[in-house]
Amino acid sequence: MTATMTVHELHEILIACAGGDRPEVSDDDLADLTLDELGYDSLALIETVARLKVQWGVEIPEGEILEVSTLGDLLDLVHRTAAV
Image (cartoon, rainbow, N blue to C red; front, top):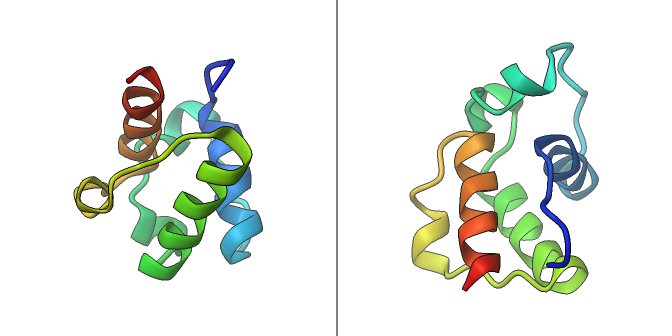
């Protein structure tokens, strides 16, 4: 990953993978919403992880993705994984 991903970019990937509406909240608030609150299930998360690998070169270990509960958690995981 050559640049730092933003919460907005990550949310756009989730929307592309799973569909759904964009919540009317600021990007700062978006990071604190749970994936359930945003309407995303485990299948959306799996598709997002696959897309992150293909488009951003970020390979997230399967066991770690299960610990994610908010969009901010997922973004932190993306940044940690990309830094390795």
